[in-house]
Amino acid sequence: MRKIFAGKSKNMTFLGMVALMSATSALLNSCNFKNEVNNDPVVSSQEHPSAEIVPDNNEEEVAPDKRVIYLTFDDGPNQGTENLLKILDKRNVCATAFLVGKHAYGSKRQKDDFQLLKQNPLIELANHSFTHAHNKYTDFYKNADAVVHDFDIAKDSLKLTDKIARTPGRNIWRLNNINVTDIKSSTAAADGLKKAGYKVIGWDLEWRPSQKMTLKGSHEAMIKKVDSIFLNDLEKTSRHLVFLTHDQYLRDADSINELDMFIEKLQKSNKFVFRKISQYPKINEVLN
Figure 1: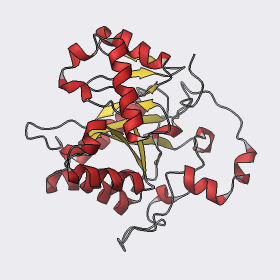
Figure 2: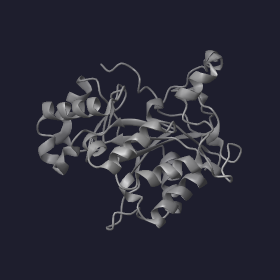
Figure 3: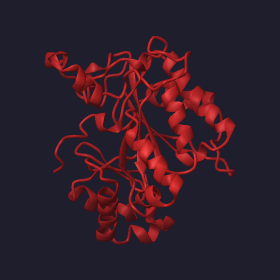
């Protein structure tokens, strides 16, 4: 790839004060640090550049030749959550889990997986509603107040400290600098979430499922899509790509291996860094 990115994000002077951040703060806020519970002798911080400490929410730390990928996984805790965690631990890479409130308490296994997600420093938790619209999306988005209430219930039940959210069944963005609604009948509900203080994040690229609810296609094909998005500047924010797939697609050996190889090859290319969604540019600005 030869394209030099500048683009939609403002270039600002690097803040020297970042260097004065304490090691403790960096470890707590960074998603790219050495994972001490990683037992894979092959994977190390030397092998994977993503193991380097990256200060929280500072896009100026990204070198001009690097691109940022935000790995996000929806609908957890669910079948496949434990496999996802094994991959992230093996590759020492961070991600954001957009959780469904009722899934966190749906069964003993889901409760246990919820605790694993909460305890893993590579994982950031975010809001994907309480009911997941009961999978009846058209009806769900007709009542904007009910949508906000559903997200409030999820926030309280999951004890989430931030109001980062993703809408079920919709690719909607509501940040100060990004306003996108894929299906216009959901506009009022999306605006209601923003008014309630939610920072709504969609995605730039989704790894979709096959009819058997496994990952469709190969990791090579997905990497080509990543390169194409960056090359053609199709991200919502230049040099920052939000990637989506779902925990429940990671139940079979092939899907687990494909996601693992996808992450490994992105790391080994030395072109990308990985961050949690709370580090997305401008996400922490006060909504207006």
